[in-house]
Image (cartoon, rainbow, N blue to C red):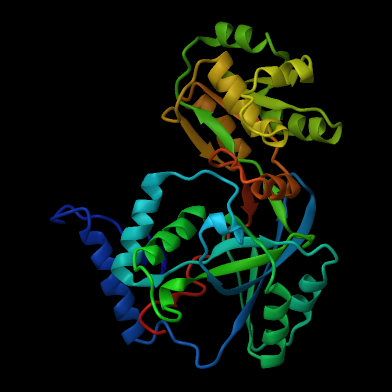
Length: 386
């Protein structure tokens, strides 16, 4: 955090040794936010604005350059049961508590969540791309993503975009914890006459038809296994054919399996040991997966991993031994640095996410990762300036 104005100072406050309670850090965030406003570091817009946000990036293992286009707007919070805003992942309660404390202390939404909308003919996507905008701000961040941020303040363009999105359902792609926190915060107020600032939070919205919409997997690192190397492989071999390779080749093997239409998992263990797992028989494999969910949810790699591989074959229950990474090489390195094993897998599709959420179901935690992340602090929504 080289800059004293890095938003992380506010969104992720650190506890200090002399803090009297664990809540002092949230008051520190509120004080710092007020200071930035007073000193003109943060400025309030004078007119209604939609922000167009483009992110251009490349992924070495995909070999292409992509540009994803979003708009940053305010979203009216709606309980999930109304079917307007749809979740697709389960959440962790402890993460929501932290977000609630920040919101209570600062009285502001400090980051935008990320959401998707259906746009079969890409008409909304093209309207957003072609809308006239003001002076842009550009930066290439340390992860190599070129970020362009520009205001759309033309009233006609704003009205057109708002009208096109008015009757759309929205899928939360990233930010379930923050959205659920915002809904709970609003509901705690009870009934109010008219709109209140707590009704809204900022969101970056992207068309499902955007060619730059990239969904990556989240790999699992297992700290401890109930069994040793040989017994682990013996148990896995009851449901999978196992091919040995060097762990550094696992990610390529996953890609080949995806191209060939085969379900493929990678298993990395200590000493560069790598194993490519493919089902002996798909129908038999699915018999070992919990039957409480829809076939689509049961068929996801992440469901097979948790329900069959972790729980049934390896006896791993709960999530205490599991950590997550989006970087396949980090997962592989972890297996050489003390973790018992790392499991690599392919990502679900955007259509998987859409269909499962429409069916009222949720994927396991950390099932999806839309790359790149929306930068924090681009837009804030103050509940004291409505």
